[in-house]
Image 1 (tube, rainbow, N blue to C red):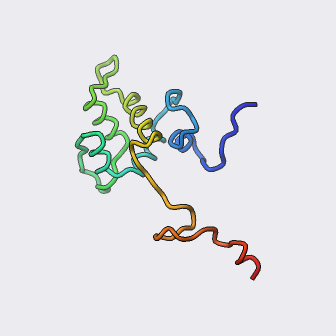
Image 2 (cartoon, rainbow, N blue to C red):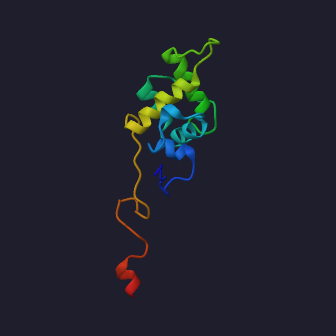
Image 3 (cartoon, rainbow, N blue to C red):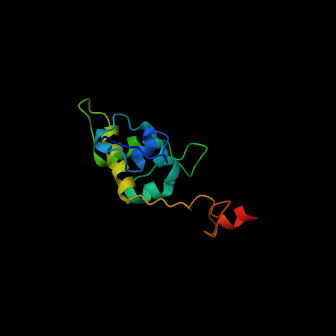
Length: 129
């Protein structure tokens, strides 16, 4: 009885981005948003959300999570009670889009080459040799 967490994730951010933990119950979005920003390109984020992210950092392909949250919250009109950009609400929207597939991210299976061919490094045939 209770939750049995999978072995494929090593942090709460990974569990959130893989859809294991509920997004609406997360307390901090920083780690999960860093994962999203590392996996989704700046150009894709700009295209999907119709926003313009400043490009003043060294890595022009990826964006910082705080920058994304600030720009997204301002563009959507998300404000908190102090009339500041509501980054937490913005993070929930972006993370739900990531988990539900609006922000597409695909990877090859482990040990696969660029053509998508490959499998375990040592299969049953290799073990017999």
